[in-house]
Amino acid sequence: MTLVFLGFFIIIIGLTVRSILGKPNIVLKITIHSLGGIVGLWLFNFLLSILGFSIPINFFTVIIVGILGFPGVLTLSILQLLGI
Image 1 (cartoon, helix red, strand yellow):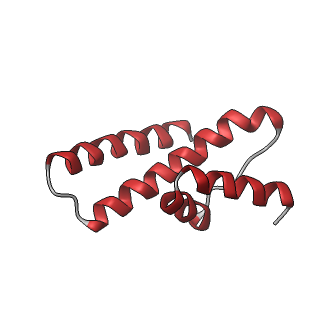
Image 2 (cartoon, one colour; image 1 turned 135 degrees about the horizontal axis):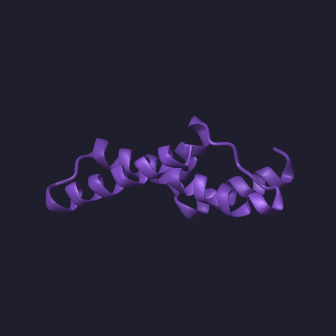
């Protein structure tokens, strides 16, 4: 599973370089944010797995983190702590 997320990270780097070199369109921006959300959630789960805390990685959580960024991770963390 770690290799999958490493692959996503490499794809993010490639898409980011492509968007810097040319004019990025909306689909490219959404893809970069969504992949960034997946990698961010995985990193968050990896670092906090020691404490037994994790956020499930699914379509809803990836979209939330892709749109909101780090505040989205904090929001999902609070919702997870509240049991929602």
